Length: 176
Image 1 (cartoon, one colour):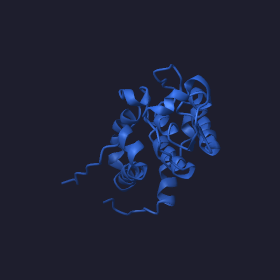
Image 2: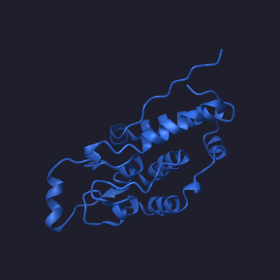
Image 3: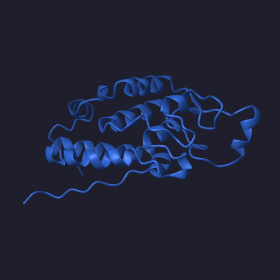
């Protein structure tokens, strides 16, 4: 009888509230695929979750674009849009370091989510990150933006399973 494995759910809210736990959960799925190649069937479900645009608080973005709203240092917005800083919104008061953001991005990219999906404002992730007059604009995330652009242009430039096996040292390890 084959082992039955379950993986904990990932969500936009978890990404915002506890990015380390989000990373742990997505790494566990990758680790499971490494240990149990038949679990590759889970990639379809994870990709579908990563492409979920049903959450209004994220301006109907997918998980990758939501991540871009969190990576780096939040800047105060000047001019007519400064009122946004008086209200809570997705990412308000939250910051994910560029290093952690890059690690989460690489894990997300393994599942090859569609990075061309547009948000409520008809912006894809590149357009959104280049927009400096929005409450989601971040600084101190240049390497993250560079990697996002690489993945946007060449989605198959995502890391192979062996990359994760090497960096997470889970060759043959069993997930918990």
